[in-house]
Image (cartoon, rainbow, N blue to C red; front, side, top):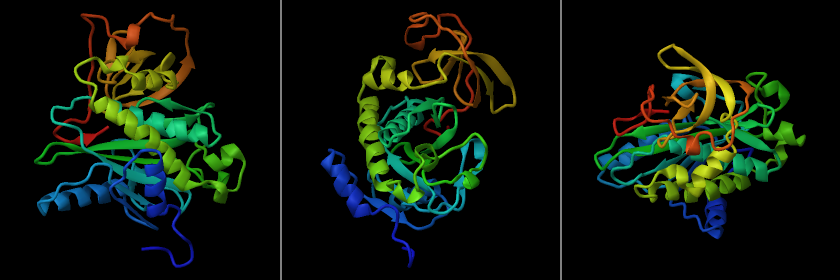
Length: 310
């Protein structure tokens, strides 16, 4: 329900029309002033439609001006002050047999990075699901959740972009917002324009991912774009894995499933990545981030047909 005193930061009709002008079709966009979690509520909507014999429409969007019980990665809570972030989730329905789950949060990160740059803030992505300022302050987090359904797994992709936060609002010292980075009043940050800009990159890149066939996706224009703006690559990192173990080394590439390659020999599919320092990696030393034959791969949690979060 709309707030009595403040119009919603996103008008559904306006966004659907603006997206259509860019060749993007949005079947349904639900936006209100508050909800518990856009991921939870979109997933609930999907399950209700399936239970009633319906088929959820791909690219259905659920957004809000304030999320009271949002989720971060690895089960963490996530929230920001009211009307200070662009918080929304979108439904993706990959085709049968789809297996490139790991690329989805990376593509989403690149879509946000591009929109942020369009808004005047140079930014980079961090594997697997963050968008940072060029000096390393967090602007956006992304969470992809797989919903196992009878007709096949579907993905609820959520993201929260810090837009109107002021310095006193920041949850930690290594965070920032578009208002802070552009030195403007938060009211000047246009949530509708940002959302349309993100969709204009996200949906075409996602379509390329799902239609790419059997060829290694690392050869695609979208993959090259993702790698070009990912500051994690070529950086010495410490990876804290979900089982509590740590791995320290240089991030030298992405494998065919978008797992992060460490020291040309080990792939990790989930974990908290801490950037330590940039290092020199000779161009072409690891073509497309390929793990050399006979090396060890360490896989942890990744989304798949049985559900889960990245």
